[in-house]
Image 1 (cartoon, rainbow, N blue to C red):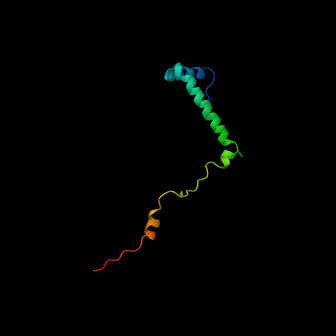
Image 2 (image 1 turned 45 degrees about the horizontal axis):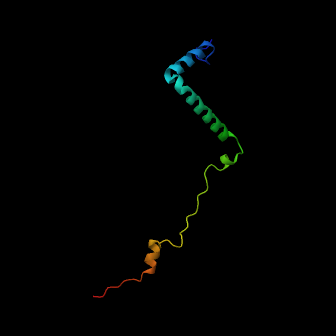
Image 3 (image 1 turned 90 degrees about the vertical axis):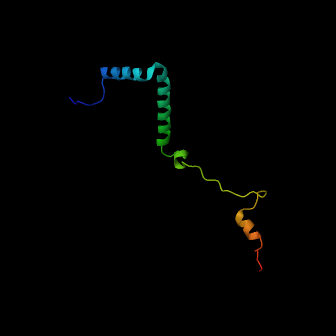
Length: 87
């Protein structure tokens, strides 16, 4: 007879009573609902061959400069004529 193993019979009742005392009957439906959502998300992620698991991150969008926007600093520097000082 192993000392530690899976709970059986009356042990489940004791565990249920402890959970009820810790969380209270008002919070248990929300807790079970959240566990169900987590299980569903886990199962969806573990299914091979789904489109979402093949491409987990969306492709980055290329950044383009709009025609009405101000020129960048490098463009301003290139368009300004060089200044010379005479002494």
